[in-house]
Length: 171
Image (cartoon, rainbow, N blue to C red; front, side, top):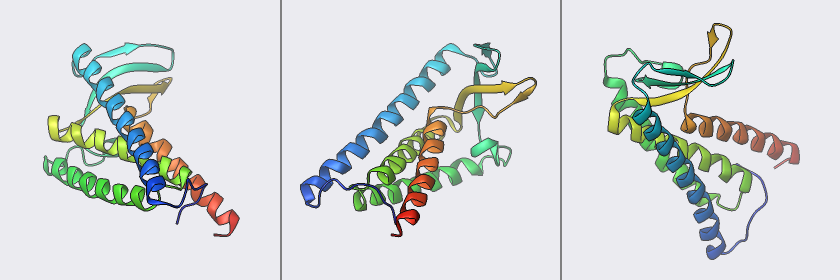
């Protein structure tokens, strides 16, 4: 399934690898939650502070999924996306346990796990995900996002890279 260097073959080595990946996921989760607490404390909903000619700090509440998908669905989506996040978390924990020695694959899963849990916690606590990074060009704005979204995106890119490398090696 995944590739990359392996740590070791014994149970102790697998536990060490798993601890590393869970630590990275925890670090992403804590960084995500910390930045969201700062934004919630410093900004009112809809506030925007220009930082550069292409970047603002904002406070946006995303009631949907990526790019506000289903944001106006009436409220049921909160529990739907929370449930998907819960199931995905269990699956990712199993994947980390099963493949802890596969470095690139496990790093990707750890980043996605930390981000997914960060956004699930937002949904449980607030009923929405707090987004605050607003990049734009002229009048076109990329949808606002957060640290969790960034980690999920980087993790997804690393999963693609891991698969490309695995296929090239013929495994």
